[in-house]
Length: 589
Image (tube, rainbow, N blue to C red; front, side, top):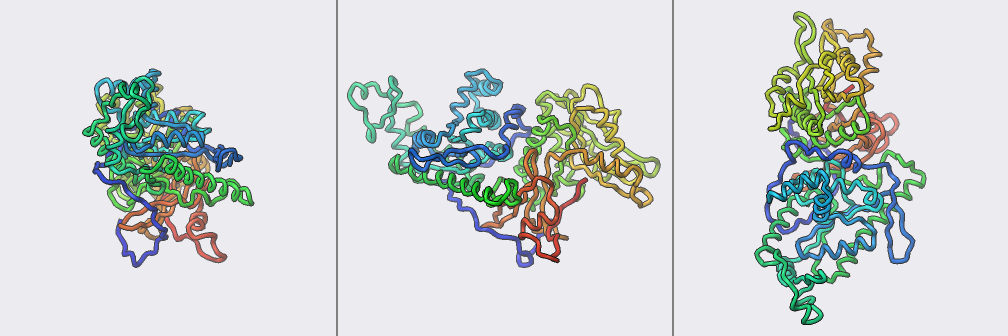
């Protein structure tokens, strides 16, 4: 994408989010796994945003009438060892009634219960290995989907701990209302840990200086925990700093750092004040919506400036692995939710340059990587997936396939499909047509099906989907508009029936970049929809040091029109004013 001089463009600007980083230790950011884990199924789907109306009780003072707002409170808290995080979690839970979730507790509970996730985690633990990020995330997502959490809200303690974990939550749209970090100087933390003693009889924690035992009898039986030595504390602090450096950028807009080197009550008072502000703001938003504004109002005041985790630097080609994986996982979660809701005719429309072979046929490789991740995940769930590419069409001089798909099937055949023999057992490569539907196939993924000069792919697709019956058929970046025939005229025979059939496929995921009309730079924003959520319009915002972010402007229940998008960016259109300052990369049905 060609760059343009900043002097010639005037993208909308907003103030940067305040982000104060912790003391650094470096850790390279890891990308998400090559194929997402099989265990995020119904539990992951249930964590998707639900219709509004859940209640949260916030108490401004003990004994006061609870304040009711639209959604339960969601809090993430982080802090180094001995920062006082455990004490603050207990006080938050006591006042706000949130469900306290720590990965250590979940891990022990899952292993103890013998669940599938617990068994998988135990295998790693028994072999002296760290439990992989995705397994831990599956456990957290499963817990977040439970009724008590969805009703009361949650307090995530010390999670996520890695960039991959944070991005997994982002891909499933699991975000807190606030991210709290307790900061305590290293010397104080080390002193707290090294001086800490445990009473093995009562389980009570003492400190040789700050909180000595009540009598000699207790003092004689106190022990030092094995991980409270100077060397191990230093190592744990470095690990914590590295993890924080990797995670905090994801939540920079929600970050609140609090001085934890004060009395417990003072620290909690500051946390309490922050949570009360969230409750108050939510209540005000609810009142605003009930005072003349419909619940599904186009502009969402409460979340207008909330950054939802859309990757930045989307104008840089090729995209980084992290950006590609964001979209792969985003598409996967939306598609799984749609299939779990018994949707069988689905289409994915993702037209960022890296995944749009219309703009550059060389990008078909990235599109196939998306298809591979999607197919392997369903194969991991035991589904037999048929991956289909448009075959040769027409006769004589018109025989052939669309340019964007040339050689695609051969590339699919030689791609790496993993070490477990998925290809040939659970994944097979085919063409588009009824003859390719076998009785053992569970679902079908069609790569960029499109009408071509002299041939109408919809006829082959209709025959194929009819043969598939109630099995899912997923179209990835289809181009099913009427195309000119070899004579240069549109195919008119059965046009209404063909277009009606094409429209029968429900969009489960859509993402496209927005530009000024007639340009491809700068990116003004993005339009995103991930089933079952609404269409969301985001504005790209420049920040200092060449950084950027995406702010949510508006939501729509249907795919917004050109005027809808223009109004979201510039306000309602004035009479006789022309619309269309924006543009799309490409069109769909």
